Image (cartoon, rainbow, N blue to C red; front, side, top):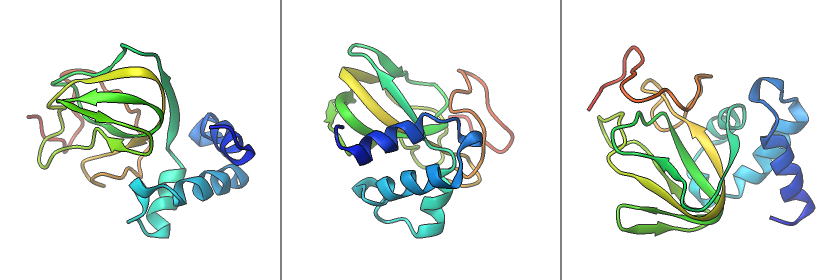
Length: 150
């Protein structure tokens, strides 16, 4: 991630979602619009995502999530790589989405090398895309009203 636009995007992602200004949202939208992982979304859904996505960095050998944890967010890899259930995911891949009818993670995600990623929140009511403002990490064994525990 070296271009000026990518640097602007990273700076905007690191601003707390509730503090983002219209200019920040525009920069985020412009970048996300070009990602294959989000190419099937219509403009209103993509703009809604821009309001709550965030940036995370993880070092190699970190465990991003474990089996049984609540699946309250999913990821788009910007750099690095992760390993999940026998498969390696590389930049621009999305991973960690819920499986149908289950709010708990079925597997573990291992960070293979220093990795940057976009975190997209999800809820039971909005499906894969979150339009809510809850935090990504809920903690093991905790559910919210309307969520199904597997």
